[in-house]
Image (cartoon, rainbow, N blue to C red; front, side, top):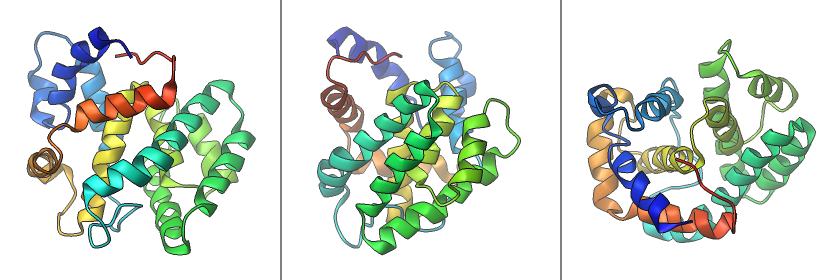
Length: 215
């Protein structure tokens, strides 16, 4: 990923979880993307941990292992498969993904997928997600979230940041994850991993190879 691309994204990323900024951004830069990110979080409140659990490991340990080695690659695969329109391929890949986890984690991811399906039921442009809910209702939250972000036309970088935020917030178990206190959640999130956006960009660059990230 070119340095110019990263620098161009940084102002957008810095505002990502300040939801008030979505409606105060008057310069037009990234406004629609920020609104779409809020929409991707709206109504999606898993009440249990996904793959990250603070009682088992720190966020940094999780980020440098499972998140980098398993979640990001899967998120990107689903994103790419959607462009091919092959739902059977997505389902098969996601099944292998779930089987790579222990039974409890796999169950957590599958149960949380219902949050996406329920929140997006009847939404325009969600045909593939609806088909997924019918053909593979016990898919992973990771795949369902990737599909809904793609349908919202949210860029990959911001989509993965939003997904990471949900992983972190749910894994804390001590934070009420909702839009009402999202500002406080964001402050805690940045406090734990202040260079998060740069690290996401680096990991995406590694996983995508020569593919281009778009803002």
